[in-house]
Length: 387
Image (cartoon, rainbow, N blue to C red; front, top):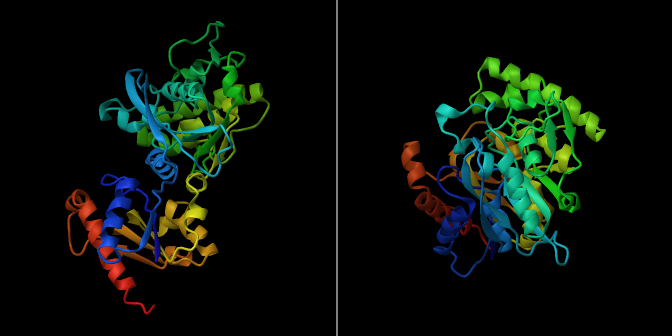
C-alpha cells in the first residue's frame, strides 16, 4: 500500500513538516509495512519555504537585512534541491517576504503601513542572486507594508526622486510613495534582469479603490480610516509614474494589490509572473509524480471549511488526485461550515483531530499528539474496507 501524506501547516501549532511526521507516526501504528511518501504542502504564504526545502532536500540560508521598521532582522530563505522545474546547473530560491517585512515583525503598538518598508525583501533577492539562483519564487503573504514594492526596488538599484530632483535615500515606505516625482531604473542591478521571478499570490485584488490594497488590507496592518485614504491616494499617484515608466497598465491586474501593492511592484520592476501559490508548490515539489500509483492521500490543515475549496492547498491536492482517481481525506484542527463545497471538489471525507470537546488552546498545544492519534483512527477505518 502506498499512502501520500500531504498536509498544509496547522497554523500556530505545527509546520507542514511536523504535521507530516505526526500523521506518518499514526499510520505506522496500523500499517507498518506501507510505503509512506511525505510531501509538506503550502499555498504560497507562511510555510512555503519549509515545504519546498523539505520536499526537494534543499537548504536554508540566513541573512541580516532591513526589517519593516528599518531595524536589522535575521531572515531566512530557501535554496531548493532537485526538482522537476530545474534545468541543469540552475538553482532556485524561495523567499517569503514576511521573513523580512512581515506583520509579525512589528510590535502591535507600532503597526502602521505608512511607516513600513519592503527594503529587506530586496536584500534577500540580492543575496539569492549572489548565490547564483536563476529562478526566484517569492511568497507575498503576511506583509506589514503598503509601499507598492518601492522599498524592494530601491534595494535592487531603482532610484526614486522627489520634487527637488533628489534621490530618496532612506528606505521607501507607504508615506514616502507620495513624495516620488520621478523614477530611474537604469541602476537596477544587471544580474536581476537575467533572473526569472515567480510570485505566489492567491488574492485577486486590484491596486486601488474599495477592493484595493489600502482599503481591504491596510486596516489589518494598523491603518485607521484616514491612513487608508492617504495610502490609496499615494499609490494612485505612484502607479501613474510606474506605468508611464514601464509602458504597461498594472493597476487593475488581478493580484496587483497583494501585500500592499507588492504584486504590482514585482510585476513592474522585476517582470514577475503572479501564480496561485499551491500550483507553484505542487509543481516544484514534483507532486504529480510523487502521488503516482498511490492508494490514498491524507492531507489536512488547522481549519477546513467552505473557503478551503477556493484556492487553498487542499483544493490543489484534490484536483491533482482526481487525474489518477486517488481518494483524498483531510484531517482538520477544526471543521467549519459549508464543507459540502469541499466534497463537491472531490474530497472524500473531513475528520476533526479532536476526539471530544476541547478548548482551542489545549487542542493547539497538543496538536501533534492529536494528529497522530487521528491518523491512527483514520487508518483503522480504512483497513475495514475489503481488499
